[in-house]
Image 1 (cartoon, helix red, strand yellow):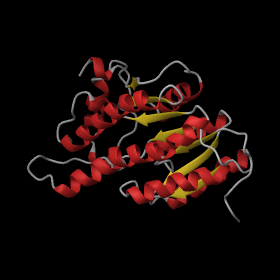
Image 2: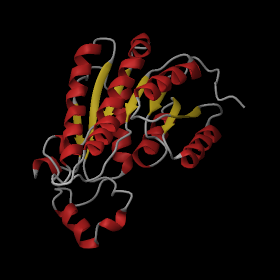
Image 3: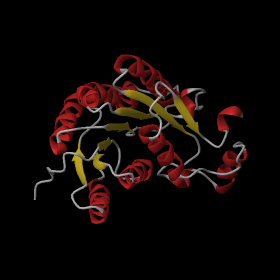
Image 4: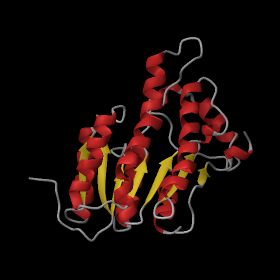
Length: 253
């Protein structure tokens, strides 16, 4: 059955890296506010399909999945074309897809630079470029997932930190370039979800991280999703801003 659907009046959100974790939470939150959802994934097809089915069970024909590699500009441009073909409109782009892994200065290689800058910065930039005309038509918005380490780097993660600093500047730059029709904002998560390989962190290490947060606890994925929804649906006069959702971590760094 074709996943090209017919409800042309419902607002549409494209969320990248949306099959699991923060991306899936953002999809659920926007869907609950009445948006049709385009779930982008690269390799997580099974969870993407499960999320699509979950959302469609709640509201028929309201979610689709699309596969693309954010490292490839051709794939990104194809993702934009396929996204617009679903409901012939786009109201929201959430640039959530991101690569994250350590790159020690002594061993960092060009492939690490390319992988982290492409997934975090290059892909989101060219996707934003590709969908900008559609967003202007709907006076839509872009929300970029940044990181608190865009402000102060995470030791052992220099390339990732630099790439996210680029995302912060992209957020402000695109707000200038796309205004007044399109608003562009960012959300910087702090200690929200542990990396997929959670076994890398001992219980003591996790407690140490939480102790450095003024709220003295880890945040929830819903904290990020609620902030994204606020910027999308309830902040018509906010653009070029980045909200840290970190339990106060940035004031104690």
